[in-house]
Length: 633
Image (cartoon, rainbow, N blue to C red):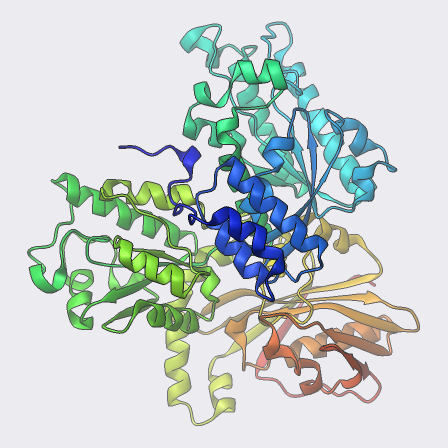
């Protein structure tokens, strides 16, 4: 039987004592964030979501530390009644790794709040503001056969004014919604061909909204796709609109909140990075160890075989956009690899798997090994496993790993994985496309390392080229992605939106550096960022220094410092200040500045401040050639 998306069927049901756990949350001695995330990772209805939201509010008011959840201040400008929807948002955001604080405005005050510099919304300094408007606010609810292009243009001009007002008056990025399509038609199947029909105008408006988001560095919440996935007849409820001005049916409040939570998580770099696959009865029907290659079911010609092909195709599609694939199976290694090597109907091959763990060790330990091998956190993993007992065991042992519920029929596996939204994205770059294939290049580098006489010999043999450039429009999307995703080699873990990155490009008081690296085995893309701000008295304060962990040990940080100092001297700077702000994940860089020759200036509560005097600095000999674009004077 088909499950409705509204029930969030990829999530397990909440525990029987869910209300008691919510009430007890604030009184815990520690682990508030982990407990919130565990409670949020259930299929909560609107009432249960509201209970958890209140518990999160009590914990926040009591000053509890909600780590590992990342803080996010979300503004809401809505043209309809939104309070009941917002009751579901904190729980949904926590499910995706975010502690969401919501700032609201009065009903239907969208334009007024955005354009008034003194408005409460602009004064809140939100990280982003959701512009929750629909076809009614945009005046696209009625047919316009006289001037449809002007009607659509006026709607987009309204949105653009709101986006611009929020940015100029409050410094906030916007989250734009696409417009859900009402199911009614005037011309029937001819609607799409009549420019002034509601359907044609909303189609045109949605295309323009997507373009506006790209042009302004805004985020996009695809409400139109959400409504289509559940059916627009169900999405729109004329009774609830007439009586309460609810923008869509209350049945879908948790689903809408979950999609919004996914987006906030992706903005904060919390989207998952690796799909871990069980094998028997997950990628194929049957047990390879018992049935042999000839006995497993996969391939065209049978309903079950094609169902498992759909799972494999879904996994390969994810890999194609940069998600790692791994295997975690209780099996003998050689037997488990057999179908990947020799079964004619398999879509996934051994070369597609970044880490292959087939043994008789418990799955929790294997998942930990997979995360270590890929140098990612356990909270970046999604485990697809048909066995309910294994799923329950992993949720208990490693609650930070996402484990979707799967129905009995494998034909629904791919649908469930897709519907769960674990791999939400706010950008897509060349580096994303290269990520999975880059594992092979990393293996070649590791082989060269093993055969090299010493580190210097190895680094020289890589024939590296490092490229420095200021922040620019071409790199903007990837820069924002790195800022929001990098946790380990990140000295301050400050987060900036794409709009804020764009503002830095033109800010004369900011020095912003993007760093790329290539070697004989391939282009590693953008691997480092430095943001420094003028702090008076010929001083730059290093706001952000982050690097990809893939380039550790290559002396890239020394090259970045040399370029930073060269540009600082050119600008008359005499002194650099660097700060280390400790987090749960960046302990590896605690001594970063000390290793580069900075002197510690002060230390308190784990926060370390360093100083570096530029006089007397001589750049070292480094194992790469350097290229640079011109920087602003």
